[in-house]
Image (cartoon, rainbow, N blue to C red):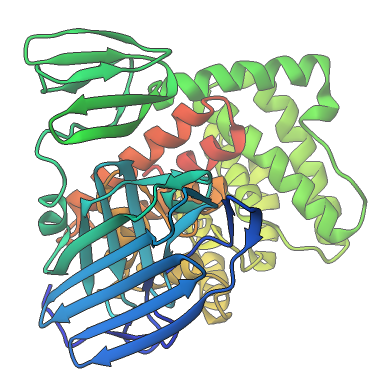
Length: 485
């Protein structure tokens, strides 16, 4: 990656932006305070001073004074913020946030107490990373918290936070800014998380913590939290212990098979007979069928296959459009037992493909199946051409389409969505299905793409976090299977 001319510049509100509409970093000051006279709503007055390489904003509300400074010169950037109490009495304040916004790019934040990293990616692919040097940052929901609600400032005392960073040439350089002792925080198949810190204290409720050959071993299930205490302060680690994907698929398929026998309406559920409602219900059913196909749960798959074929026939008669999982499940049936009716239904559905997230992924799978069965894939080519001509409604849809057309920058964009395989989460936090969708898109990356190895690693870590969160979520698992080559 080459470094271009994108650089930090004032956004006009005390924050600093990279480029005209790129990512920003700022501070959201407390809105309320409790002092000797009770609770008050804070009204901040501000004054900003701008120099070619510095932006400083001073905020004052009664005895509280905050200063936010951005220093940038060339390829370096430092963000400093302080909040001081000039009175003779203690004052408690409401939450204070580090405000990170992606703009027209991407933002990724690892906020782990006394350790943290903020990564900003412009729409042109420029990478900026800032590591926490002073203070503490934590994630609460979708926010990055500098000072928790109820933080008390002693008289004549000041608290501060500082991040220091630079423009980076690639994700390897950004990864080098993480603590050297930090292990992979997501594992599969009963593996432990190895923490090579023999002198640190580790607390992980809900986990088994013991001494291993090189340090501390942590064993657990699902999503867990560990606190590491050392000379560096207290660092909070979000751990993910995930089952092997095949085990998660098999277990979930068994649950679906039981529902097929006992509560079929839970698997084949259509809210209405209108084309849109029918299409959504069929795509939901198709996700379950994809899991049954993968787990080779043949008896249940045969039942759901019948529902799907009938439903798709009804859908096409109403003028409805087939969703991506419906197409993929039909292709799976055509491949599973060389089913002429499934092939016929699939060929009828292809021209009615819906331009939505995952359709390109599904059509590439359909193409491969038809080719393998000796069928002419020309209908798929036409459907792909139509889908690619439609406007993309989201960033991930745009990436999906650029990947399949061989855009050289698309893989790096997807890598930014996945945070380069770093710990943390994007800002804002996406829906769970969107995270699974991003993982699935890695299957469209060409083998020879130079970002491929890191992208595969980033996708695997994201998949582990998803299945650790809920190993029996059929919607997430079906996305992951849709992305398998």
